[in-house]
Image (cartoon, rainbow, N blue to C red; front, side, top):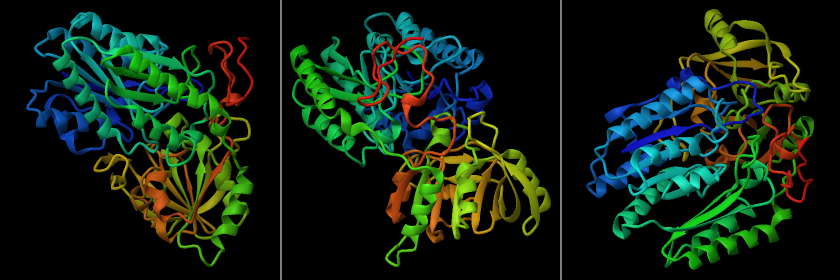
Length: 496
């Protein structure tokens, strides 16, 4: 039996995920059921890789449902019970030899801190102790004891941007095959790290993350079937938030030794996981300087990291827009800006018309002030977009009405659906050719790098006011495990 349920929950974010969010998909497949899941075989998702591997092995698949929504605050109790209930009801009907679940690992619902652990526990109760249960997880999973104890194997992505999602599903299938052949559980080991990591520091294209995952791959051999490192999603306020290293294999001593070596490496490198950030004006000033270099062969890309809808923000803060306009930036573009009302008004007045609009200022974040100006409507579309970049390659998304609004030399791609700027086609659907811009401001933290670094002259990270706090030490934590450091070598958490 195969199913998927993915949500990355930022408990500090302004908006919750309802069942309607999962129905829309919001950059994910829009709630496929039954045999419709099998169409995901060619999409860069874990379930796609698992389906391909299973079909190659001539396994009979029993597809149930795949549900995903844009990161946000808590998953509503209604949405959680409807989707988890659908999966568990299928498990209870039986008729299969194993369960594979495509999960995220950082879901918090209104009722459960550990959404995936609760789901895995329900599945385990339904199938009993002997039937194999395997799950794939996001690199940003917050691994819990409940998750580890109720699954026979858990395996996480090894890239951020996540270009290995399908490959992770294939690894899950390989682990399931090994469980079939062993006919007994794997030996298991896990260690929890004592500090939180900023998400920008987790990028596997950069050090120290790149070397950490290289070492993980080297240690995965012989009696060690699988090693995973989830740096965690440092915006979920519950005691088991944070980085975890774990592994599965034939021999307990070998698995424990590999996990311990990775753990020791992380402690030695702790200081290297910290991240520097630029203020909005400083980021734009530096971008203008770099873009003026006659040797520049592509745009300077700025990550508007604290308004990343891929981490729970609403993609509608105006700090970076204001900085671009005040600096009189030319040939600049920003996207995606989530404002269905502005997109609808642009469609009413049409291309070439002007609109007086107020954008942003709705997040409730201190410093996120609204931006008011007169915009020209440059381009319109209905928002049908196919991802051609390395992440989510081949996926079709429907953004609803999209508009390109220009103020001065700044183009704003406005969307009716939240979607992280992780694919260049998300600019093109608004009539913007990203390669022709001198500056691109992407509402993303790291995922944009997969498709934008090949064209970027330089990449900067800006810390404009927004709900996705880039430095976890800045968050108003209340329920973390006492003593965990809030950033690498940062202050320890003390319960209020």
